[in-house]
Length: 546
Ligand code: ADP
Ligand code: MG
Image (cartoon, rainbow, N blue to C red; front, top):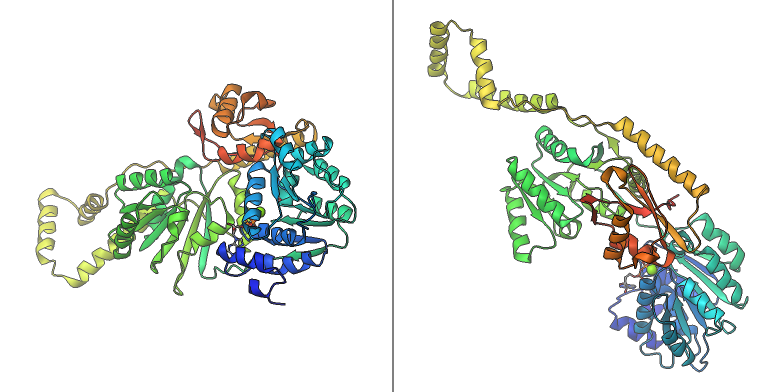
């Protein structure tokens, strides 16, 4: 079965028309494989990575199977967050544009319930909601589940991660048992499989495996280095390997601008390429890079799409990418046109875990590389210099210079070797440099301790009901106080301070509880912020990846 056109799918003309209007040229794999199966009424587990069109994969069958003449709720879609509920609802409305008589409604916490009740009463066939609010409506009897024939769990992994399991089970139990149940998820976990066993009837697993990732001729290294040393490490690597062209990736525009200034201050020919630049500015930077006027391009992921230069010998992940796919995309800037490439990724502390995710995704191991020592850099410089010296000896007439040296030695009572040494010193300089001391082992211990701490907390002190416990990597050492945390959550995520739960501040990190419904928003909004001048890292305290 290899359907590749919407035309070939067993769907109505109304849907074909809206899909064409949305600009979908062909169904994505999860769509072409799930839609026909869901339309037969079978339970389905659809697994495909983020951004592969899972929404339409379940929305199209829902729209096809709902009876427009029946004004009762016939399908319920559960989503982890209010944003997703709105998004799914909006996509479903677009897809159902030419299906007359079908009404969809998003319901979620935070919106006045009266308005939702009024809308529900007006006759809605598809409800898209967050678990909490759906239960609320069930309890108020404003959402009647007895005619629901389809139940969809969208982003099932996210929902379980956010602690919605009980709520989901409650809803499943309130739905007629003859219903069709479909789960959609980017990842599959034990918990999802447990739910599947309990609530689905002989489900068909439709799993879309990612394209094989091939990065054959790129040597991938990682270097453990803390943020403060990254610049020095980068410069040493460039000095030692002396790549013709290299691309350095940063996660933020500001970060890339700062790095460019620092590199320029050290005398490197570097420039930035990021999304804030106008197209003409980007073209100028790219031209300079192609011509070698600059040999270091500092880029963000967005801007990197336009990098199509064959001579890039090295890629640096100055910041580890947020997403595994970005990693592949980034390092793919080198090793092009059959050439060999090298990539270096800078990691530290808990980023190692992120790196493991990348390794799993790319099915490649990153090889540890030591920070080049000052001796390495010097050796490299000296070797290059002596090569030049040898070439000069070979290719030119040095009789005049030889005479000068002879005279000098004679007059001052010096040895020729002393003079040569002094000349090398003048040519190469001899700065007193500090070796970089990375306290790798002690840091490992520390992150181990942290993991234990978190483990203990997971077992001992669970988040209160309805709350999610988040981990932030700043604490007493950064003079963090509860008000800083509350302030940041209120300011960045717009969550009223009174909704923020328990805050536990330790030396190096902090745990804070926020309402489940808000967890995703807090995580999203606080991803790239600073608290008391410290760039923070925030994540769910209950680690998700298995
Ligand atoms: P997922 O839920 O798998 O993460 P989404 O359903 O949110 O992915 O889809 C991601 C994006 O792809 C959306 O903008 C959606 O409109 C778009 N999209 C979905 N299906 C197609 C298609 N067949 N062709 C092109 N774009 C599509
Ligand atoms: Mg989705």
